[in-house]
Structure formats: structure tokens, C-alpha cells
Figure: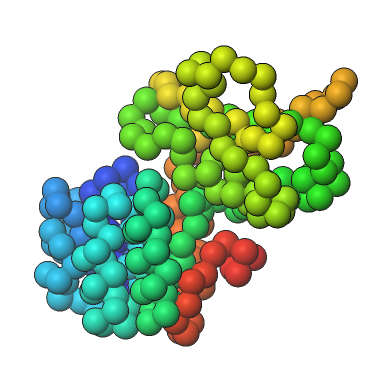
Length: 249
């Protein structure tokens, strides 16, 4: 049985994670962390990691990048594994995650969906086949409450494509500010915010007289919660290191 603490437990994703775990027999929520401590289940909710009274195997975080420092400190002090599922980390925060992974096991990916990670691999394969003959654009769509743009998943997809292309591309987020033709060595990344869209990502490979698209659409937040819980089970007993969906699948 994997003992889990949910960070951000009172938010939408935290509640979905709790629901997923409550229907499984290989994990148990022993406590929750949330700055808005509202008790809605049978576990205790505290406002920060150092107030935890339980000894969790893993902390699943669906809160906010501002919570990262406290979580990393707690994990390193107590040898607790982390599943970091929040989005919007900056370069400095990502560097801290990589450094902490030298001491504790950390599962870190921009998207917990199995389908998105398959999409990532398909995009890398497409680049290896299409080479420099196709322009690449990424379009992401999310609900009107999402704060960060572009999404971490869109950036993850762009970085995967760029890595498969020996880093030859630069990213363009705002075309209207520069009136010039599209450069062949760029990936356009575009954000749409509206309604209750859970998450949609599209990669467009536009060539001469033909267009190839790879698309993923999430119908509910459960796909991300299931991935995070599976990651928590996967991490139990693992040595220190930085893990991703590629390791799990």
C-alpha cells in the first residue's frame, strides 16, 4: 500500500486525485496539504508540508509553482518521493527540481496523460522522417481559468521536437509584432483560452501541398489524475533520480 499526501488537495485536481485513489486498493491518502484547508474527506488537511504528522511514501502535487520550495525541502529532509504535476515552472525552479532529484526520487513531466506522451514520441518520429521540408506549428487550447500560456505541455512538445532536430529551431509566440515572412527554423506556438476546454494540443506539419497533424484532446481531468497516481505507485521504492512518463511506460 502506497501512503500518499496530496498537495493542493482542496483544488479541482486534488479532489479528482483523491477520488481516483479512493477507488483503488494499492494506494491510500494519509493527509493533504492546501493553503485553503477545507476538510472534505476522512484525511487531515494542513497548510504546509512541515505541518504533516504522517510519514507518506509519496507526495502528489497539483498546487502551484510557489509551493515547490517547501515540498523540495520536506522531501529532502524526510526522504519522501515527489510527483510534481503542477505547471508553469520557470527555468530556475526546474533547475531546483533537477538538483533535488539527486537526493530523492522525483517524477516530473509537463503532462501526466499517457496519450500526450505518445503524441510526443510520434512528433519526434515525424521530425526524423520529414526533416526540414515541413513548417511546424503547435496550437494549445485550455479553459478560461488557466493562468500560464503557453501550456507546459506545448513547450514540452516543442522541446521534444527541437531535441530530435539537434536544437535548430527557435520558438515564436507572437507573430503580429513583427511583419516578415515565416523563418524556416522556427516553431510557432499559439494559445487559445475559452470556456471549459480541459486540454487540447495540436502539432501541425505543413509542407508543400500537404499537411500532417497530430492531435490530442482530453475529455476530463481524470486522465491527468490517473497518470499522477500511477506515477506515485511507480516511484515507491525507487532510488533518487528524475523520472518521467517515458520511464513508467
